[in-house]
Image 1 (spheres, helix red, strand yellow):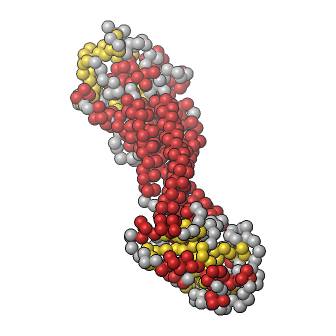
Image 2 (cartoon, each protein chain N blue to C red; image 1 turned 180 degrees about the vertical axis):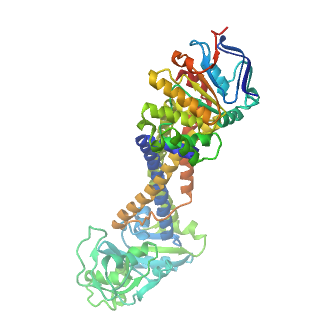
Length: 214
Length: 404
């Protein structure tokens, strides 16, 4: 049983086709790289998978749920509950402490606020001491780990990462990749990393290549 | 973690802007509260002092001055009226009751009022200590006078010509003795020294070569006796149509209707109150504008925050609430601070006025209209947040995230 299945998906901006995928599916717990040159629609596909963007045509089924069938607010709830997202820009809510950022993720997903789970996730990412810190007090690496923690705190079934390594040096690039893989594995989430980073190509076996939009 | 705590965290994150908005709102609220409390208590007090007095008769002059001097004891009298004319009015068939007042002297800027015991009864005042006067030069102190001067029963003092701080020579030859102290009434009586009108005549008896004051009523000729004003109660409603005109046309006295003159006074004061109220509303309005600008600008800085919250599962409605909640929180803080400030300022003003022995105003009272002021403040907060909230609702997350 596939965790997600994409079928005959296409999307356009202002009449210009930016994405076309015939078929792609992934099973629970699999790790995938989503590859392709810039402009091939990696981010658009990722947003469509996350239900952030409704594609112009085609179908996306995630965890047996056809995303197109959900109302806007049901789609928001579904995303909060089942999908974790790590963006290239590690954006934490600046007015909230680290622990509150994670609690917010639970609250917005409509889940009970479980402080123990939050502390567990932070400890697992070696951030136990930073729980009360404000985002501006964190180093880049710490902020990145908090962003990952926020994405996995609700034990998502699908973990999406958009260019997580693009601005990092080699050593850190591999660290982040391993971090994502370890966290995805910890909650048996299917991991999709959209990237054009050559350095990690050899590290993940399953790869889906987007061509230039047809 | 909930919508309100996220809203509050944003307010805390920019303390100066928040402080400015809260302060602006609070000043508007405080000004309106101050006006409400002050005018409410002022009008209530004015009406209480004038209750049951249908007409005041004094010497020819400004009717407003007659009311201010004879009822509120805030002004100098227009002059004196002759005893015989006063008797005529007292005997008029349309007059139920007359309380004569003989004014002119004061003690430490508290006015000495020569009158009959009816005056005390009219305000329902109770004697707290001692008794009422029955001989000339016996005085009864209002509660405020007793408290301020520290005089107890048996104390003696001399009155001085005039009113307020501009008192003239003291009448050293005729000291009063305190025989009674009234309980607090919350009326003008609290600020008065009361005695018989014969006392007032006696103190000024040198002018008539009378040395023995005990029997002054008989020693003075009727032509020499004078009152300052008469407080008149009508015997029938018909009197209102007849008596004032009769007095004004057929004597050298002036009749003044308290209800009419106080209404006139309120309209004069009301202009100032209206200006202040308008000023307060402008303050509230600018506070609303300031909240609007703050939220609107913050929205640009927080576009990405909002998009992130959507990726975490927040619905559009949640973001709308988040912004509305922020406006509401600001307004609520402004309203609370404004209430505290308003009552505090009223109390300070009340103490300052008390020192000047004018009208008593206290901040430790409240009027139902304050609820409307709070509602107005909250309304301003919500209204100011409405457009920013709508923009938050409309945020295109995919676009925002893609642009970074």
